[in-house]
Length: 132
Image (cartoon, rainbow, N blue to C red):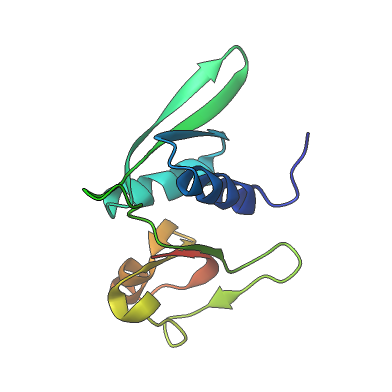
């Protein structure tokens, strides 16, 4: 089955798994989803992820992270640029998500980066999503 918006599907799967307190979620593989999962791991929103191969099909297993009171570390996930309405930003248009408490993920010519990295490196691109 072909998905119209695979990144939105990834975020929805993660959001749904967090609502019912699952420890992991399986997502169909793509390079961009793996890059987003790596940013989530590096920024501390998930425990880890791994890529598994089932025959000729690859999946990403994302291990979700909860705090001591069994609350999700991720409070919200929001898709910004959509297939019907792409959102491009440059360094002049970039602002920190929730005053620096969250992160934005941007697809640049130098790869997938956070808003903070884009501001430091002075690059822009397609604003994919936000997490807080």
